[in-house]
Length: 213
Image 1: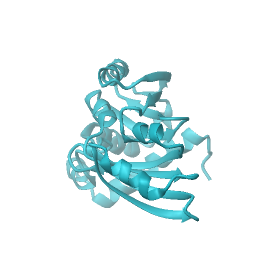
Image 2: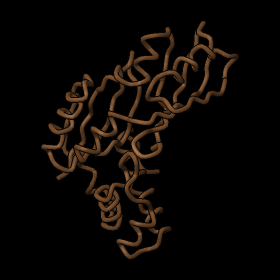
Image 3: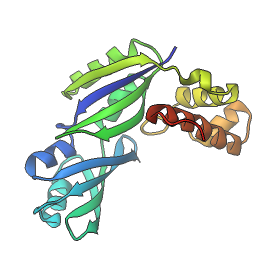
């Protein structure tokens, strides 16, 4: 049996928390992808208000865990999109060490984010919260429930998605790619790519409560 958990996690210990404590800005996390061996690249949208963009980027660049900062103005210098590369990601390490998988992440008020994670064993949620606590990352578990979407998946979709999860395809950073999954299952990369998209679509529709069209 698999479980889905929702957690609110404080980002005070990372570059986001330091930045929000320093500047009166609004920051929304849009996406994150792996960067180098243990880091991530965060794509964020920032409402600057009266904050100078150069002062902001210089501050972020000066933080010890930050490798680079890129930005693109999108609204009369009042709103920007930024990509921030960090060399280490404590939250990502907590997830990987607990054998849990990050399905989605969204910004909350202040320096908090909400995580939706997939858990292969019930006890792994305790491991995850323990890891976060040891890292000094405040958090609260909002909900844990059985992941009930497997009966909506075809056998082929469940087989490919389960292999992807267990092989580390959804880890930060990824442990395997489409080619490795295809080779292990004895199918084509196109088949794996299509089947994963189909399974992920169903899971996303369940999350938003959208029926198949």
